[in-house]
Length: 348
Ligand SMILES: [Zn+2]
Image (cartoon, helix red, strand yellow):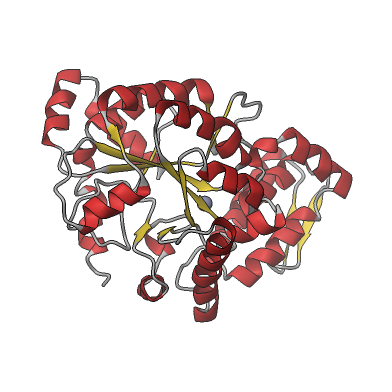
């Protein structure tokens, strides 16, 4: 995902005259995704999903001057009415539901009059529990153990050197993305066991940026221009290994929790992880049956009126300002990348 954006940035070079031409040729809307924004990033490995506010502010000023930032509802209406996009529309989205979405992002976007969407994983909001990727990065980084037992994976890792720790982290990270959700919970328990409880308390305080919101905070977000939408109940990746009942539950429970806590219909969805292997025809059929109107991947592309509404493209927002400008100015160049449109058409 990152490498695609990087190569995209490189390919475009720096010929700004060309970008102006490209902007005129755009045919669709651009949907960008972030996770969170922080005033101060003290550890870029643990806080790798957070963008610095200094960069974010410049990005938003650029959008404010040059583009029409539209809400989830406006985008859905234009898309469903097959209203021709002007090519100037941008929609901002934030995944998972971090506290900084309320404390940092929302007040700033509200001051610019810019709407946005937050895709929340509802069990994490219910329980105040952090995401598997946080446990993965933090446990291997801070454990003092020489080795680690993972009954969930039937294996033991040697953690004797920094390189071995990195290897263990990569191995467990791959498993987290491909096993069924019940196993993910077991793996997270094994990760938690790598550090004593008081160490977790200390690290959780140090990395407040990785904490999910409460429902009270999610409700406050809606007062500042946010649409709340689903990112599964458990942040479950809906790949082909998930049992049908799990897929059904993730899609239905998250919608139910959002509707009862927020009081408005939940009609949009973002697939956790959101790459090609992270959705199936079964999950799309389930989304449609549950009454969702749109679902987003994390595959970069321009959103056009003939896209499959349940396999919509979304581009990761580059953390760097120049690459960000190149992306939003010339998003039409994303069209056709990785044969996205051909692949999306294989789903009904
Ligand atoms: Zn996510």
